[in-house]
Length: 436
Image (cartoon, rainbow, N blue to C red; front, side):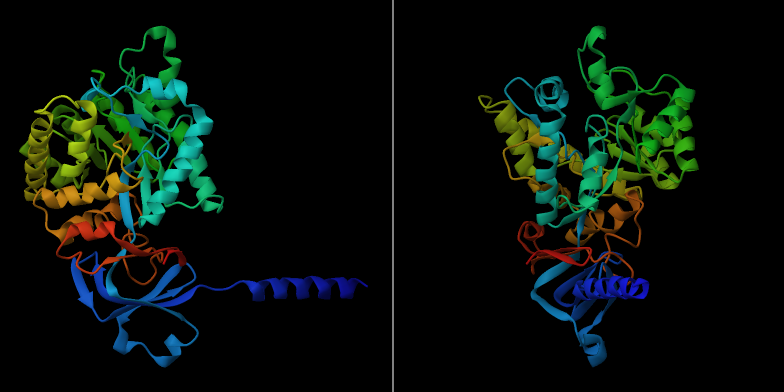
């Protein structure tokens, strides 16, 4: 009887194993984007086995044995890219623009007190699905997720409960007093604590890092300055935070909007700078020397026009003013590149500009091209360079052996017209076809 039971268990196990279909593909590319070199190559195929890429080579060099048993996906009419990466998202957070509420000082308080965690979770899941369908297969989510809601969404995606991109999560951002909630009286500072981890000195900064890591953070986000409030972390606090995070092999990236905040964060040893709306050339040179990655969350002309229409619908000059700022952002991005700074793509997508989910993320890449960046380099910002900011080099953002099979196909003229990234024909994440 015992032997019979053992045999039955083995039979059931073998039958179950036989029913598991391995994902094995041969993908033909029209133009294949090599994100490491910034080149578009023709005549290439991608061999996929389970979650990973087995090989990328010229189709003529693929043997019959390698072809056998693979499902052929013919994308020869399209440009094939690594899945795109957004280094600065807030999937569980949304703000609405309305007249009198300027882009520079948008108010979170209404959203935090009227939506609640349950709604935010559902909203985040819907946005995660839209990001994946758009071919954005990895993101770095930088807080404003309540008490670690980003970690819960990441877990749900990993467990297959909801579809979405791979996620690096920060949890609560480490900030000086007040976070980014302007005008909150002392009695209601618990609102701040729901969104931010207020740091009270270098030793407390170390403790804050440990708290976030314990909850599952795989990146630490700090607020070197916390606009629209006017307090800042000290260099000593930043150094303590960075030292503790690096002790665990975890990167630190800093919200920093002006030159002083950027400089303090770089001196403090951070790995990345988010936003950097106003940065001196000497600070960019320091960033290049230290290898600090720059994530300019700029948007494009469409997004800026939407901002103006929603925030100032009766102001005929609002469009011209915001586009003037848009042109300035292009100047400072080109200054960063001249200094040799590594740039990675990030959208800071949380403002509802009445466009479909994930549009703002892709229009950020379009914005880099509007700023004078060549198409191939802008695509590198959102693939290979972004993999560095996410600490996933060789695993995402590239089409090469050993990387995750995160693959996107868009219109074939993307090398000439960046707007082609909006026209998605195929998405694969980890060897599983999402859009075909």
